[in-house]
Image (tube, rainbow over all chains, first blue to last red; front, side, top):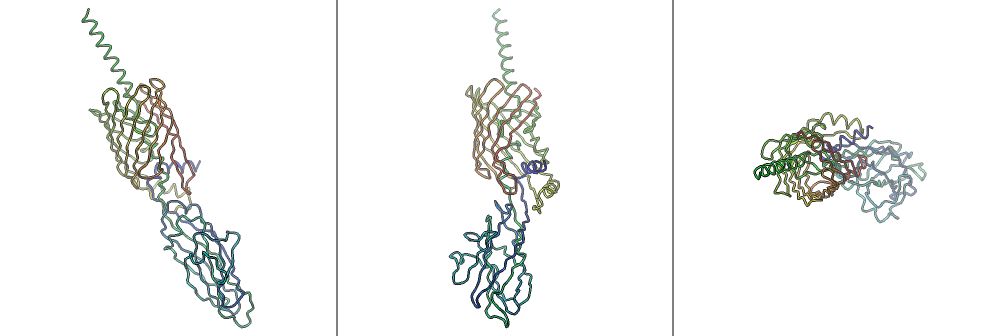
Length: 191
Length: 228
């Protein structure tokens, strides 16, 4: 009944409304193990976007919140983040790992959303990224985050593999929808 | 005697003309989801169109459904027969939406994802409809334009197949030149009585947005009463 009422309201007005929708993806966490020093290591993670973000939308604001956890005891790690809007191999349940020496061909199409930055050992750092300029995310139902981790120098007493953990990654989007597709109902009103 | 016959013939002709006139003039000037190319000659209360005739084919009208949905609207409509077989209707309307706050609260209550719902529905609309009666069927064409939140325009055609004097099967088809959905389509029945008017059918509405339930088709309903 509530859905019927909702639809009824939109029937007459859907054609004429701007609707602002706030979307937040479920938090995901991902560890990126590094097995050799000096070699860029990547984890590719798939994120499915809520259906409300699809359709005829314009992005008002797109941000990401995450924690970078360098769980190693003594090694500084360099973290980077890229975003890919099509062609990734990973699925939401199965991440894909590769290194600089066996990157997939689509790697270069991914946009850098967070340039490489170093994190001291045994630190957990909160990061907030504004990626509103990423218009390519428009209409995508699944995106891929490619997380890079590099250890340029192993700390004293450190044993590989060492892990960088990306924790509670959330994408927040504020989008505007025109709801034009609901305008077909207007002919039924005599307006 | 000849004079009496002539008077009787004139009287009969007048009654026939009047009843034909009355039969044609009932209804609220709507097919299923399209304008009917007919004059509105009587006060009519209808869901899609409620109207008060003024003079020379002009009428003041309003969409009752629009008013119920907090979109008060007022239009001027002119309709006329063109000879024995053709009809023409032209209209303009202005709609003023007054339900912004109410709708915003309601929609936000229904959809937690929706943070701001800012309906802006006021604006003008205009239409022109032409119809031609071929006896068993009547063909109509309509062009319409509205400027509410964005521009919408379309051209539609309709076929009425008259099953009897009062019942007709109506089929409508058209294209939206501006604004979705790409096509206009409706099929149903229409009853035009001396007072009571009624139409029932199904119309393609193509509602397809992930935020809404997907609804390709909705019922097209109209009820009216003409004070003939």
